[in-house]
Image 1 (tube, one colour):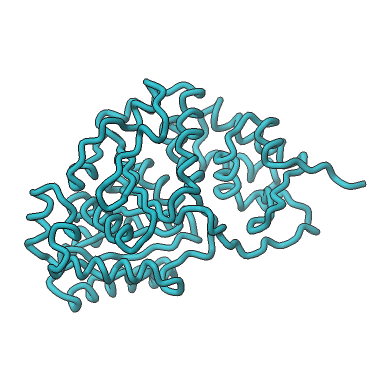
Image 2 (image 1 turned 90 degrees about the vertical axis):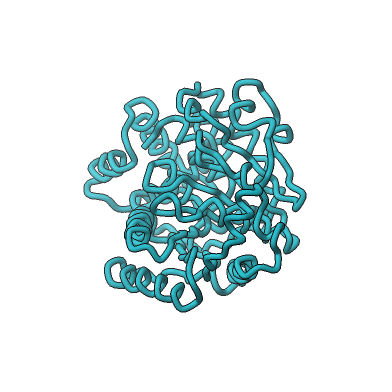
Length: 372
C-alpha cells in the first residue's frame, strides 16, 4: 500500500511551523532524517516526517533545547543516529538553486574594525552598477550602520514593521544606485521578546523580497555570536573579511572553523582588506587557506583584496560609498575585481547547498525567538 504523502503546505498546517522553519530543520538535522528530495519540485513528506517535525518543535519551542541538544535527543531516539528514511529511499539529487531565488552573500569577520561594513556597502553598490537587482540587509541588529556609509536616513526599520504594522515596501530605503536597504535600526535587540504572531508577521512580510532581487548581501555582526553564525550559515556563500593583522587572521580562522563544523557544505571565501598590494593579500590568503586545508580539509575561496587606500576613509567620512564617490581610485578598482570574481559562475558559486531568502529570514525569526 502506498504511503500517505503531504505537501509542504499540508506539513505547515499539521505542525504549525513556518515553511522556513521546516527547511531549516531539514538542513540542521539532515544526519538523522531526510524530509524531501532537494532539487525537485515534488517536496513531499510522509507521516514519519510529520511526527519528527512535531518532536523537534516540542523540544525547541516548548522545552528550549539547543540544536546540539535536539541532535543528541534524535540520535538517542533513533538508536544511535542515521537517517529516518527507509533504506530503499532514493539518494538526494544534486541541488540546483532556482534562478528565481535571490543569491545570498553573507559578509562577516572574526573581529570588528576590519572594514566589514565598508566592504558590504561597496559590494552592494558595485553589483547594482553591474545591472544586478541588489538588496542589502543590515543584520547587525541594534548596531546597524550601513545607512551611515550610504548617506541615508531610513525612516523605517524592522521595529516599525513589528510595532506599527508597516509593509515591506515602506521598510525599504532605495539608494541612487538602486540598492534596496533594509535597516536593522537601533535598539532592535528588543525583537528577541516578540510574540509568535509578531514573528510570523516579519517572516510573511519580508519573504516577498525573495523573488524580486538577484542578490541579497547580508552585513552580519562581527565575531562568533549566535546571530552572526545563523545569518552566515543560511547564505549561499560567506565572504570573510580580514586584514594583514595577525589577530584579525586568528579571529577569521576561528569563525571559518566554526561555520565549517556547523555546515560542511559551506562555501567560504577570504577577502583581504587594507593590504599594501596583491603580494601582501596573497600572503594573507595563503596563511588562512593552508591552515584550513591542514586542520579542516577545507579549501577557501580567494576573493581578492582591497588596498589600504586613503580614499576609503575619506568616503566613509563623507558618508558616501567609495565606488560612487571615487570610482577611479585604486580601492574602487579592487572592488571591481572582487565583483568580477563573485559573478564568475565557475569561481565562487556554491552548488552544494540550498539557500534562499526565506531560509535567511527563518534565521532572523529564530534569532528573535532566542533559539540556539
